Every structure is written in C-alpha cells, then in structure tokens.
Image (cartoon, rainbow, N blue to C red):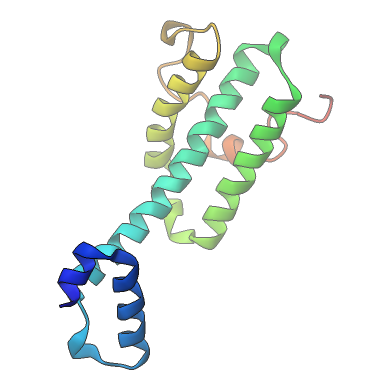
Length: 147
C-alpha cells in the first residue's frame, strides 16, 4: 500500500511515513522508498551548494574580467551567493571535504553563466577556476567596499 501511495500521491506518502515514524510502527514503513528519499535529500544539499557556488564564481569571473561593467547587481549577487554558500556549509559541515569537487563542477556552470551574460567567450576565460576555496568564501574578496 505504502509503495503504491508513493507512486500516486507523494505528499500523502510523506505524511503517512511521518505518522508511522512518530507512532513507531516500524513494520509498516516503506523502507525502500524512505532510503531513496533520504539519500536524495543529501544529494540535494550538495547540488544546492554547487548551484550557489556556480553563480558566485560566475560573478567573481565577471567582476575580474569585466571591471568596466561592474555593477551594484553583481556586488549584491556575490554577497548573496557567498552568504548562501557559507550558510549551507555551516548547516552541513560534512560537505566541506567535497568542496574541491563541488567547486570544480560549479566552475563549469559558472563559465556558461559568464558566456551567456557577457560578450566573453569560453576562450577568453580560464580553463580552471582561478580562485582558491578561501577566496571564494572570503567576504573581503574581492574588495567590494568601494563600489
């Protein structure tokens, strides 16, 4: 029954599973789908961090490679995405060991963002992320105070 509900009404399934957990009805739980959903939640946290870092790195690249086009919007995006990334890492410290891998993946999407939003082409941009993890997460990098 629970597996069928999982396929036909996911929201109702989540409510049912929550109630079964609260009432400690272990034998009635849909273990297979619960495991899948819990694993998915972990992957989602990692993906959200990667997405924030992709936007952040993209705007750091725009800031570096187009100094004449710097804007208040770019500054706000850098601050916002850095705050989101830092908060995600604070809430999920076990993601820190994956930062090099996540940043490498985020860098690829950051290049697409820069190419899409500026006149720059892939050949104009670095092949590897030019920023260290420390720089990416450092609220004083780059110096945004005079803008």
